[in-house]
Length: 231
Ligand code: HEM
Ligand code: HEM
Image (cartoon, rainbow, N blue to C red):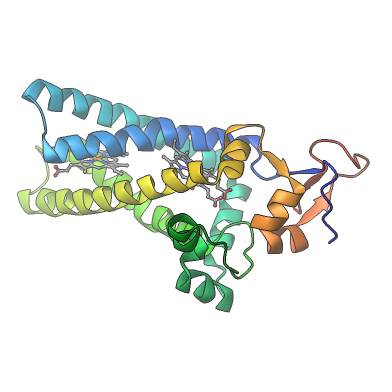
């Protein structure tokens, strides 16, 4: 595809995905932050108890968001799974140079990076972690919430350890995601704005996606959302 910078935009994140992302911010993020407090106990008992209340409120928002997304946007989840499982030689090349981020951030040098699709290899790893570890984190969390007095002590001990280790790991991963989400300002504006991005910018960041997976919106040649992802 020929990508001129003629004001055309591509819809990268449809409304349902942007709303789900807000669900993750209002649910997963407070759960992750308070998880650190519950574990490290940096303040008084009252402070840790408050953190626990926020943790459970965040957990509820997270769980409802995931259920609604699964019920209403199953096709988006299918796409997310497909993208995160498609790996080839380019991903090895991308990982070997860290996506060019260390060179850009530390040396101010833009190096050649293997072309990526809608998501890069780092995002694929983050996505796979969410797909595999997210449900375990949610299920172990509700077990700890509801069954501590009822379940055998050993089971609770194991559940607690799994929840703690995955929670800390995912929490740290999340901060990397947030940092890069803001660092890549164009991506930030697309996710937190109307979901669209200038076509030329998408072609630079996601060349394979722009080449293969998007199509013009019929009859709306030069309008805002003039390109969308193929069904
Ligand atoms: C549906 C989601 C979740 C529920 C229901 C939930 C529930 C809980 C509960 C009940 C505890 C207290 C365990 C205890 O009394 O020892 C806890 C602790 C914790 N949670 Fe969650 N949680 C959820 C999601 C998360 C998420 C998304 C993270 C981080 C990304 C997280 C990280 C932690 C951490 C680090 C602890 C401290 C564990 C410890 O000190 O042993 N949780 N969670
Ligand atoms: C304020 C905090 C956050 C910021 C600034 C942020 C930023 C972003 C941005 C810019 C994107 C689009 C990336 C792209 O298209 O290249 C994105 C996608 C995404 N974010 Fe966040 N995010 C935040 C919080 C979260 C939280 C709490 C989660 C939950 C774990 C999360 C999970 C995701 C996922 C799953 C995607 C989709 C990746 C994909 O396109 O496949 N984000 N985020």
